Image (cartoon, rainbow, N blue to C red; front, side, top):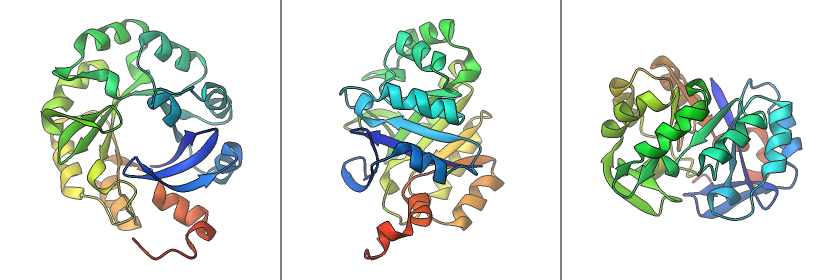
Length: 232
């Protein structure tokens, strides 16, 4: 399944390269949602919330009322997670809060599991050079993806795994990395990070993974934004 991404910043839809450089900015999140109407689910990330700024909770809530949305960004507390579920999220995506600088934040995850149904919880595992990266990818942990996924299984129903090295570059992803992840967990995985063409999407489908698409789906849906740009 293809899952388009709507990343929110400053009440607009943006696409960032490597989580830093803004490459796309669209003013109306609901117009973007309408463009993605044929897709059964949407991934919504509140980048402002993730960066500790004022969240876009009202926009996220309205998007959830229009379409099944997987929602992440700034879910750092159990109370916030419960609120996002109550606001209609199909699933919540917990990222950095699932970890500490020393490893997996089991105390938080146990508390979360006590108040949010497991089938509502996804854990985002973002990796740079196969090391887990947290806090906006500014800190990497001495943990690999293959080590953490089995340990996180009791706390979630699905993983969102992002290959940071290729994120936003439109140069393709690392299918071997995703195949390695498939071998260490039986839980569903949504793959993200640099997925560029139909061949990669089909390869991921063959190993049972969804594909969360950012820059590549905007290139196809809003080709005018890329008309004067060379391929990266």
